[in-house]
Length: 257
Ligand SMILES: O=C(O)CCC(=O)C(=O)O
Image 1: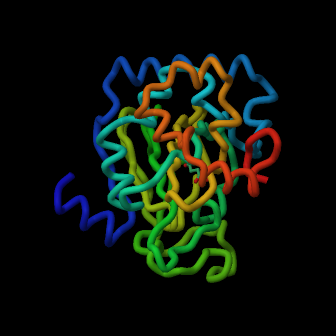
Image 2 (image 1 turned 90 degrees about the vertical axis):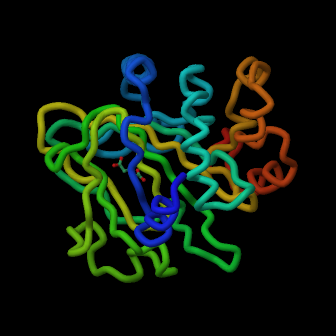
């Protein structure tokens, strides 16, 4: 990671890693997520959250080995560490595709409604572009610098869904990965095209916060059995503090209450 990238993340709250996903890896991610969307049908995303105008998939680590490569990607992890510090873990790996001709933008938000605290930043996200993101097809919008405000958009804005004068669009090619400080205000935009806009969200959190999706409870024993030591650490499988935090905050099915 260059000093320039560190500065950009610090000042703006995001940066884009061009072409991080190689063509075979991209094809594998598209293939498996398309299969899952077809398999899960109208239940897709239901175990965590469904959303009007978008198709979501949750708990992806339990739904295909190809996703292990996403959450253990060393370059992506280096950038997560630059935001979260030495000790952090996966919070969730989800998929979100904005539907063709979806009318509404998502309200601007900070992930998990988190604000920077005395220790520092506690949430960071990586957006894995499975399609080109264009100004027309529902590219994510960011408001640079807002990760430092210590305020949520719903506290500051009359209408968090409205266009923000300082917002920027994440324009990129399939295969790019955007890294963002997830305290920075952001959200999906409307897709005005006839094709879906697909992405994965590899969401990470600091050591002292609960996971959005309690991996140890959600993963089948056979999935846990084949994880490498590195993946066990990333998913906090052997972390008693994470067990304690998630026991308080997640439901019996392992998703944040
Ligand atoms: O998919 C996107 O463009 C952004 C989604 C997002 O921020 C969310 O669902 O929290």
